[in-house]
Image 1 (cartoon, rainbow over the protein chains, first blue to last red):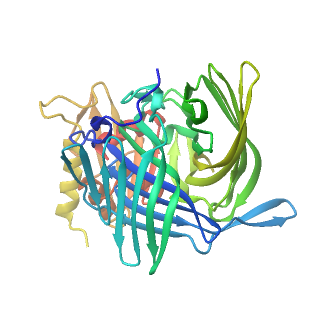
Image 2 (image 1 turned 90 degrees about the vertical axis):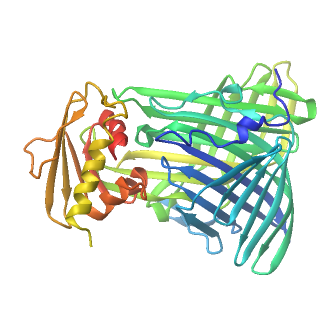
Image 3 (image 1 turned 90 degrees about the horizontal axis):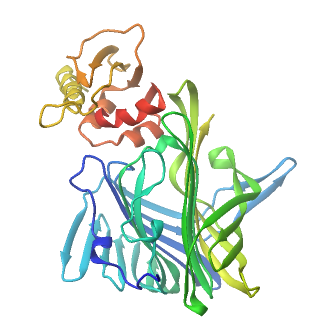
Length: 350
Length: 111
């Protein structure tokens, strides 16, 4: 059954605040152009003791700075990206009428079932953006509030709204009108063991004709057994068709040396998502410098299961996408103007 | 500068987190020897857990702990006061840990 184009109030409200462990995020992104340049702005309120409490604004504008070296392509840091974080700020929240209001630091989200608004007001940066779903809200495990067992321990619920975004952003006195596409997400969980995760890709994508999100996670259980999780949903805007993913694959096709992390990351992935109606095939390519969510870390002092020394990587990679959806009856829909984010987690031995 | 009183209070908080409000252990059936080392104050502390019940903390260096936690006393107090998250402390190198994957999860109860 096709999900609704609006949220339930329950999907927007903070969860598990009375639990000893909890996490909520209200996450907004917008891809837009200004003066002919592709830009990405991201606003996030993350609450709770599982991943740290923080209000974030990120603005990405530089194209990739790649340098060919004899044995590798090296990705150099962006020089003009802005990352403003306000850590350990209190969360304020209220429900008035049909509006869930969430404030942390300089960020305030006004979440209504049919539309969401994010307002940012800080010295040198102001933003006021309204997010309207392009179609059905997508859900983790195909149901609002469904609890997904992402790893042995980790349980995640979440809703993803692929949205049209309107408003403006002012940086250092320069106001940019925003007409773009983006994502509003609320994800919540009360159990996480980050150290079980070995490999995670979460991707959302907008095309003129289509939108989707997927999540794929490989992890290790407490008994050192492999644990697999995948979920995803797609919506063909032009045919008003909702398509839950039945299976998916994300395969790196090319790698680049991320100097900041002193390691390689995929710069290009191929993605295949199968649904009852047909198969999606995408080429996903990093378009801007990764937005680092947690500094790439060498955990030299961590010894788990007698493996001494670990490294972690956790970033949002702004991506451009190309591809097509092929129906089982042979019809092919080429997909145009693909933009999105590929969130990446990697945990492994040093 | 961390006082000895604050450090002891934090150790007691870690211990208290293993007991639910009704007095039952949060981790029943769990038997472990946990070694804390605070290099800034050069102190070893031990907490032995029997069937989920934490015994009183003792100032000693254990021969064969199941879990080793090394951090500054200030970091430990931050963790116990919840001004610092365990994950952030670990990923920023403020805490050194030696444990099994199963115990990493259990540690979230008292870290």
